[in-house]
Amino acid sequence: MAALFEPDPKQIPARIRYAEQLILSRERELLSQKADFAEQRALNNSLHALKALYSCLNCAAAAAPWTRPSKFPPTDESQR
Image (cartoon, rainbow, N blue to C red; front, side):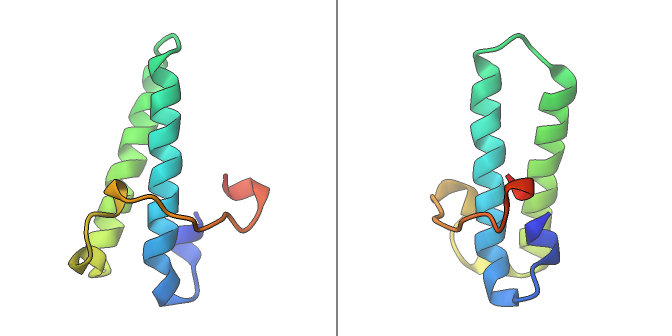
């Protein structure tokens, strides 16, 4: 959610990268657990939505954000 409501446009790409990292991390966790298809589908949909947001905001001039680590911290525990 932080990526969607970031007031500083310069920070949006970092917020998107951070959100993508969290999604990918959760997807890796699910690989070792019993399949929860609803959660996997929700994570996949969220990842696609973030990629679309990144593209719409013309952030795509940089390398794909989902391939680079980010050190952008969450603003609070509710955004983890």
